[in-house]
Length: 402
Image (cartoon, rainbow, N blue to C red; front, top):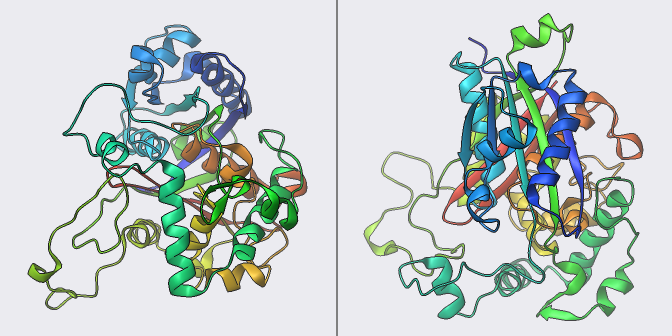
């Protein structure tokens, strides 16, 4: 049995600060995806919702919330939460249902109405919650965490503030061309340098905002796609949701400790050296899809900060460790470059709408592989990967092919 599922529809609600319910955003994205697929709501067998924890009980049962908003019609529902990897988990659940023969048509939806400023932990006293502890014990807001990674790159690889600014300039140039992006204005390196310091060395324009927004996909079996006359659809070939392996010598918050490296041999006896967590996410996706980074036409990665985008270049195998900044300086990752990254404009242009962002990445890959991305189009795009991660060790990568 083929492991491919077809992407017949992709839809989004524009991202910004709209002051409305996440349900409104999700319903809009879902309807747009259904219209794009040419599929009626009554034909949907299953709805998979990526949860938001900021919108009360409806957010915790997002699958049922979106099904109700579209009008009860008997579809099965699934709700998933994996922090920033929620969208990839939702796609994985939908794909599994199709490949298992439980559904022919699955609607995947993620939407959020985010707070102002940075994300804070849920309220209450929870000393057994690592996310709560990292704020209370370390004072580590997300920007502080991003800044630690930036400083690490500067110390180990010689990355500079100018390199970080180049990422923002590149992504803003792409975001300017994307009608769904929140920020659609070109940015200069001088403007990045002049923006306020948030967490040294990162400035305001180095860090993504929090946003309202939504994204949706209509996934189907290959037989259903062909029956609808779509002989060569965009296809999801792999979804990676792997967890880390120990030892973890570079910590991802909210973790603030790891096991002792003195008790673990690396490499394991008879095996290769362990990959870092983010490298393992992409590696699992490549192995499942039967491709390598050399096969990619483009990539969408999780640019919570400009520095983190450079890290992802290395994690997904576009270059060797420490060479991300050089790849950027060459222009390879810009529109028109050898391997464009974040043709959508990335989170720097969208902001974070947590349950939606991994789905939005696949929307962009879908439009690129269809050849319908307009001025952002990567000529001849045939293979793309999305990559991000969620708190508490949630991997997130999707390989999309045509």
